Length: 361
Image 1 (cartoon, rainbow, N blue to C red):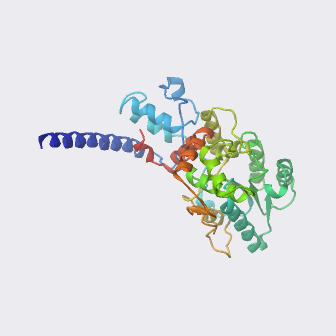
Image 2: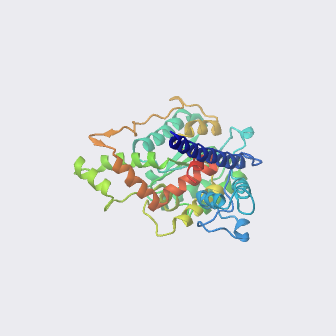
Image 3: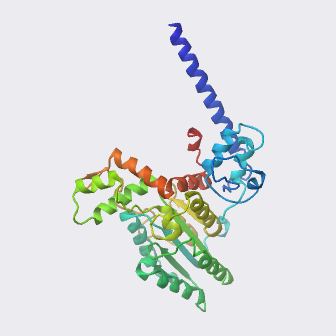
């Protein structure tokens, strides 16, 4: 009996320490002034303690590493929790002033690589929205319809060079679309041109949580696999051998889906920098209402309603194929390899102040 009481006492003490530490870290997060402008600053590229120069530079990198370093160095003092965590919120990012809405004219760039039925449903909803607001003179230009990146960029340049009164253009950038590792100048020129006309560029980028994205991609890959059986497809995916897995981070930066031979920390830094510098809205599927954002910015009305309806992409069974525990394990390996795990962690931290990391220190 005494032994059991001692064990319970040790467990309660450990739990109290964990709760106390979590609360202190949480207070450090929530005590940041101007907390609406979440953004990452002074990141570190490894678990090494950053030096003084790194603390005052602007490389947005892997918040999970910054937090680990902070916890390792204690609650107070240089590089500790109370010193480091507030720095993660110091640098403002692009925002839209709601008092200026709706805009009277401009370009909406919608960048997404959401696979399968849901991605197609987003594109169909945009086309329907423009058709139902034909009195405003809006134009829709799709990179997929353009057939090549060169043709898509040429159409964007036509918008920049267009003379006379400007109304609305919606640019759907997906397949054959922009690669933000190299095409930031296209957005810069487009924004300058719109502002000269008294209009606005609203650049939006949409992402999915890794598991949700991977399930959608599995569904799409299975639908496109013409001559493979359920068993063959399952075994190949669960083994991870000879599987071309397209990640969101590589799509956003390079628009190929192929894993670039760069350190993931470098890729995450580049992606977060591009989002911070060029994008007005960064949305996570399931956490934001994409359709409401479009209607809020433009003032348009949707005859089909605000809800975008797609097939049940998270159904546990897909035409005889079932998601499995081994698939999920393989998803995690894919995400670690292509950088999506760290990238989505950064998105959640910067744009949503996600505190799930408190339980992963």
